[in-house]
Image (cartoon, rainbow, N blue to C red):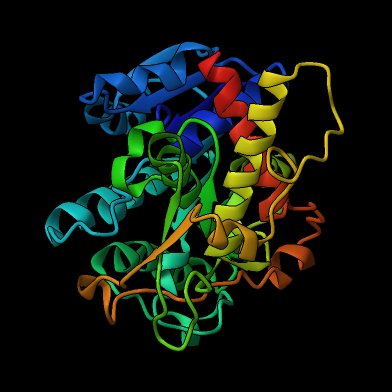
Length: 350
């Protein structure tokens, strides 16, 4: 059984390969653009049978060069929400996805692809139906247009697709293997670096009726994203567009506090190996938000003028469609997910 993962050296793509490897699946063709050579690190510890540059893959796949492919996890895209080159964005995120979908259809290959919660844009409701889809940028539109095309062809939940077709609207994903993403890396990643370098975490101040640090997002741990992708891989009869978030909106303050408390616990563990359960509030015990602010471990900055009117202050995935499909996966809270992430970064560093 051969599987293709596009965007394979990227954040979610490499984690999907890791998840497949954990099942003993190694017949994987990895597709990506390694112009940024440092991304190789995301593939170095994984087992694949081939690597193909993205400029070569799509035509070769259309020509049947790889034989029978069971499924394609299409994670390759331009994910920079600040990119303003509309032609570039549409070519990468819409036209390329149309091409791979056509090839999958002709070869009876299942397609599981990355859509985005950016399709909702300024909406206050995050449910997979057109009335709530209001993208704020060309990135969100490029993702929405492909969803719309598939709906026009196969019905609102792709019920008429002859082969499995699944689109995941990812919310704010964080976790290991995102170090190459630069400014587009998760809040947790940037806050980890801030805390290590400056001893504090910076958050936006009050904006749009939300108190400082209280803007809320649906933060979802990448391990959960992989588990849901693989659940659908195990259920080839399930198709449709599905939100992939935790279903829980939490404030940025929660992420910052989880980062800070994880670092405090890790520091204490390294200073006093074997001495668990130490409750010294000044050193390792979890702080409350008020305590972290009082100790100046959290700093609030003015909301950037460049983001006024272009910023989602609240997102929360409606998981009713996911649950209706039969996926009962339990998602990490920010506290558990960020703590696990900080531990993984420390282990990698060691």
